[in-house]
Image 1 (cartoon, helix red, strand yellow):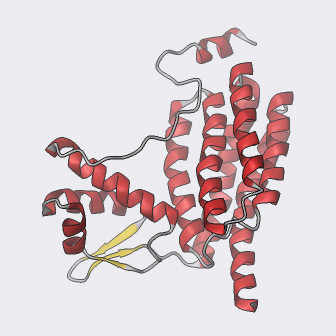
Image 2 (cartoon, one colour):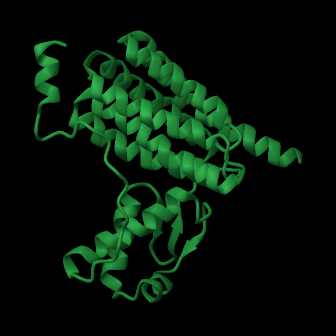
Length: 251
């Protein structure tokens, strides 16, 4: 391992291992309330619990969360900035809707970015980080035996984020990791609100095989292959969404 890599790995301001998902609870303190509402609503949007174009009533959300108008509106404004909802003056708030070509364009762009991260990660990863990635991959492998479609789909979404987060940490670049996190939120949203529900569930075996090729390239320190396999994996997501929708239409 180079001295530059060692310094990156030893940076106390940057985590070396994948963080554990944290349960979000509403903090009644005013400074945290809007953040908690935002976190709860964003998780619902990423899970596909709201349909594209569905109206969101601020009044109903106030009642549900038992909060004043201010934290609801602050949370909605943040979600609008994330591209997850649209706030239409004099009309109201609705879940964002994207045209198919826009979804395809996003995954082409996202694929190039994630491919760049994977290529860099192949040159900077540590043995500890590779072991962490291996452990996550085993969890995804076990998920393949799950028969409940919703459980399988949500489990893959969470473990898939962990898998890619582990690769982001290998790159030792906070600017890349933070930029990618925002793109991953939009990716999960598009997957779960575009077309068929749970579109990645039937493709889990194929997605896991993609991960295994990426993981092998990272272990080998093969920058070119890691980049190419990651980019193909992400871009292919749009095809998986379309295939699931076609299958639903044919049934």
